[in-house]
Image 1 (cartoon, rainbow, N blue to C red):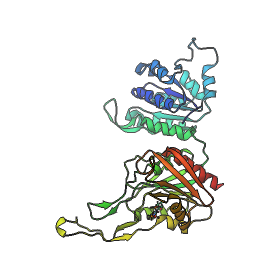
Image 2 (cartoon, rainbow, N blue to C red):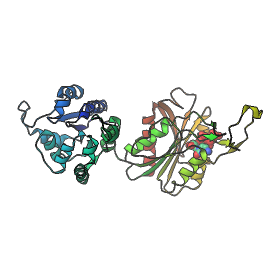
Image 3 (cartoon, rainbow, N blue to C red):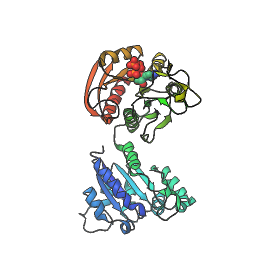
Image 4 (tube, rainbow, N blue to C red):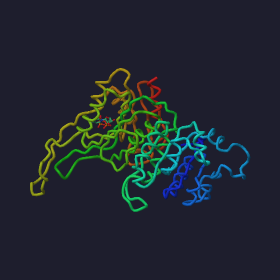
Amino acid sequence: MLTGKTIILGVTGGIAAYKAANLASLLKKQHADVHVIMTKNAMEFITPLTFETLTVNKCLTDTFDRNFKFEVEHVELAKKADLAIIAPATANVCAKLAHGLADDMLTTTLLACQCPHIIAPAMNTRMYENPITQDNLHLLEHYGFTIIEPASGLLACGDSGKGKFPDEGLILEYILRAIAYPKDLAGKKILVTAGPTQEAVDPVRYLTNHSTGKMGYALARMAMLRGADVTLVTGETSLTPPPFVDTIRIKSAHDLFEAVTSRSEEQDIIIKAAAVADYRPAVVSDEKVKKSDGDLSLALERTEDTLSYLGAHKRPGQLLCGFAMETSQLEERARGKLERKNLDLIAANNLKVAGAGFGTDTNVITLIDKQQTRHLEQMSKEAAAMEILTVLRDMMK
Ligand code: CTP
């Protein structure tokens, strides 16, 4: 959420200017106070009225507009802003900002801004790849701008290549990462596992479970937004991994064991939200198993218990958080796992409780540590992730 945050959205004259309307709307939905500044050329593509309707603020377009109440408008806004973003940024505005030119409302305001500033260049591929533009972008980076790389694809001019306006959702993530939450996990390395595992039976089939990965992905994203250096080890899911997170894809419980244990030593916190298979087929057939092979019975063998291994090899100061999904005797069983696996925290949820478990957007979690049990109300998986991270952060102190 961006409640209480003032954001300057600079819109410059490229065809992607119309997409800035969606960004303004996304920012408004996050409760930001959005002030749009348009260049003259931007107004050829989209009107100020669009942004004024979306942001409920006057759209600034001209330094010398005499209808404003008299104060040094660009300086006032620059002082008030928590963040400035230019999206889309043309090659022209990148060049002007890189060299300190300030000849309109947008560039003068940006020059007066001391808040974090982000730039999302969008232009024709040849213009983007031109060494002059590239040098200007490097200069802007040097001066502290965060540059969002343009996307690749079919451009409005008919060319194909790099230069497309990035996904508005991705731009929002950049903004949230910059200013949305206290960066109380900065400098911490956190590894999260998410999703189901798949245990092959033959080249066609596998054994798995109903995990969708939502809880683990929410944990990884929230930890990232709170400043942590996050690794996400994920089984197959339909979710898009959060940006700024090092994502490692795995299939089986054995892959997960390898991926996690090879990275566990350097982690400050490991959170195991993945639903890991306890058993796998003892023999994986190289060929597709046929009906004509006769009655099939599947011999199973145990997989490695990654969390038990981590508990047994925990380095001093490292925190381990497990998950327990049960259908009965929740607290007792979860506490048993906490002790057996040498964990610091376990997030337990009962699959049979409404609003908890696989595939839902909410969860009803009981947080159990060595000292106490806390029953949380039903809440979104994002909110539950925040609670878990806060408890772990306090344990680190
Ligand atoms: N876990 C793991 N490796 C496994 C099985 C589970 O790391 N092979 C982790 C899960 O990621 C979870 C925790 O252990 O964080 C508890 O998983 P759960 O399946 O609830 O418990 P189990 O120990 O497997 O016990 P049971 O299946 O009997 O409930």
